[in-house]
Image 1 (cartoon, rainbow, N blue to C red):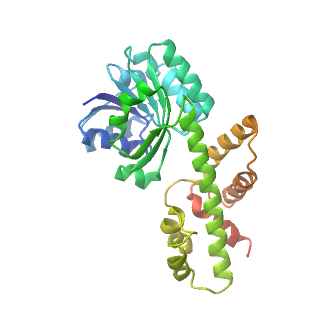
Image 2: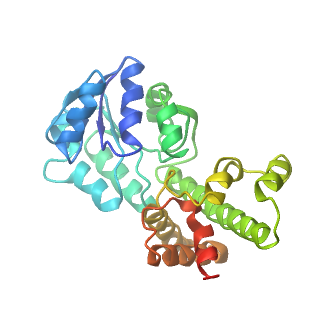
Image 3: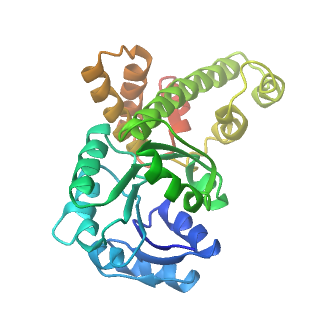
Length: 291
């Protein structure tokens, strides 16, 4: 069993850190709001630290799951960042959905300090984190990955090393591109069915078992029909992720017309006050245009 730190106890990090304790690892947590770290300790077996540096001291692996590139740099390379507390040979595993550039930068910094690094963004949402069935996309050195793979298993349904540092983040960008297109297609299909007077739920019950089926269709069609948008990943976070995607596309020359327009559709959802609605709220945008 490993001695690990987990930095960032948000919607995803809180249960992920919990799965590490259930798997028998010794876990020290850090969260910007210390009360949340204390709440985690009261629920799981572990310790809370006041700074990322303190959390990382003596640990074999330091996991990070925060909001964006700026947050990531703050908790890793900042004044009291985790890297300052890490012992030689320890490994930093970043579960943040961040830029590939940030992953490559941290990999270089860790290399200079005699540390290992793996970028490892996840997919599966809050339910996946709570149930320990996340998909984990990793980038980095293969020997370093072999050391963290059995520990990540505590909350992963699947995981794979996809290339050098940054490859995990690029894979997560592909994931978000797919989701954006799928949710928009599902929203349009439901809207079309409603305008046509069909029993939309009955139609979905049929087509979800065919070529049109997807996780989004199976798990989100009923909540969309019920106009309930408080499930899973928020629009604000999706726009952050799509911004990363589109910026990377400008750099590598990829053409993403559907992703770009769905990003704009999400900006319209934000204008409706839907910043914290989940990503399936693209249907709400279509319905608002009827009013």
